[in-house]
Image 1 (cartoon, rainbow, N blue to C red):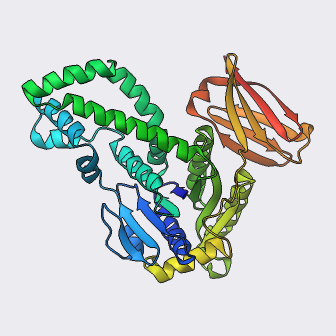
Image 2: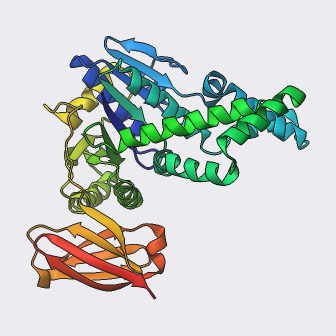
Image 3: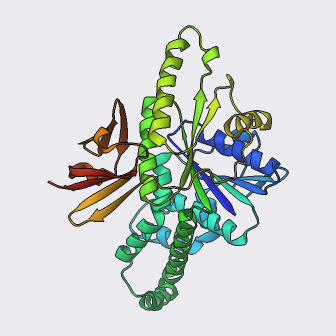
Length: 386
């Protein structure tokens, strides 16, 4: 099975790109499921077909699903939810508040992972297309396995045997399903780790960044790209959505399209060597199968959307001694042409009269640039503590 995850800043058109990709793949003969992990679901609107918490048939070879965290908890984690509800009520919370708090942080993303693990294990689909939440929530989703493992080790520092033994006694005397809730928590953790391995495999999973030719959107896309690479997820392309065709620009749009042209150059340079796919503004809202086909034709041309478009990590960050080494591929560049400056968590790389900004993880804000060296096509930058 192939998995393609779409992410980007809120409002850039992730849902449209995910829906059009899934439709094109299905019509090429691949049995496809498109699923939304965004709490603000709009996948139903894109297809103009009602979807629910279980897969619904959209057309031949294509099914769609919108996650519902409460439905998922009821289906998979009834005992864990009951345990949390009991504890919150015991602490004096009102029923409505206890119900809300029983969905612990990360459970929405955890629910998504449980379904994805299920579909991957059952292998009933050729392609899984994920319409993800905005960038921040997507990064939460992709880092959930590591965070959950740490949280469980700190919050439940008991041996499994002891927890089950104590839990059985507690359940018999109070009715609180402590042991069964703990079993469900362990099962969740195991499945999360399994899905992390799946997502980290570039032969299985690709992330596609959706962006617009606008300054704020581009900057967030750069940051997302940095973090996705840092966490080991393969980004195989960037899709630039809502480009206004130059021949359609007139009057007050003329200045806007001129700016877009500048931003398109910045996108090409910043994300090189990633393939840059383009979708032009259609002048109308995109919903329904006909318009989705039109979008997929623009984006993919004669390409197979299920293909892996790119699989080379352009840069890496690793710890060395008391600092961190950043390695960036810069082909066809002479060492004397490179000049680097660091401002907070941002590296500014000047190549002659061109400039490239790379956003680093936020912890590097407190590191200083010690030195850098270009060897072949690999630029090595050393960051150390002040």
